[in-house]
Image 1 (cartoon, rainbow, N blue to C red):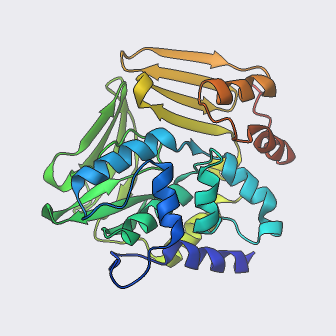
Image 2: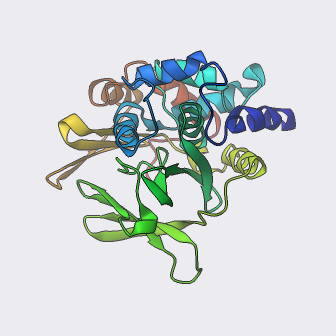
Length: 303
């Protein structure tokens, strides 16, 4: 499978740093990606556009591992683990999103293509995020993340102590690490209670192609976190709620801090929830469940 990783190296890492739009033609996938988000290329890089980009991305593209399971199953035929950017964008119109292994690298690639100075950063040993530099804040880097199922609806100015983002019961804070100078921790709270802070990063250390390649390879191991469960998350801002499907359990959290858990008994009920609640009518969850079954994972089994 090493040749597959070489493909990933180039697909995910071409375009790091801001691109001079006057020197090259904008590829069609850029326009299609923005079209999916109901956006157009901005005249200049700005915080205002990034805030809108964040909100559209998190509310229109699901965090899901359905695509990951299918890419794993089809890798011998497709000759890749992660699809080329053109295929990834095509998949967006079929209700796919992805995990941090595709959502953040391809969002970073898009932003670079439309004039933003941004890089990938590695959090811990298995998560990616995006750091952006803006003329509006010349001495800062801003944090963005579309692959953490986290309510980061605007770039977080973590180096200026404006380091939190909240939606309903969920709050994310990007906090300086108490033990390692120059490092920050992605800290998650729910209903005011600490959840975890295992993701740590140094904003001065950009994620290299080699690092990303290694993380991607590890994420497709059969015992990897998102190879052993079904997961679909979506922020529905207009409805004031967050949907989270974890195997056969649907959790609905609302802005009034209510939480409702629904246990689903069969594949048909899961498909119904994906169609009616998530409005992801094309997302092939049945195929993903079949892949999990082939990996000896029963999502209906009690833990």
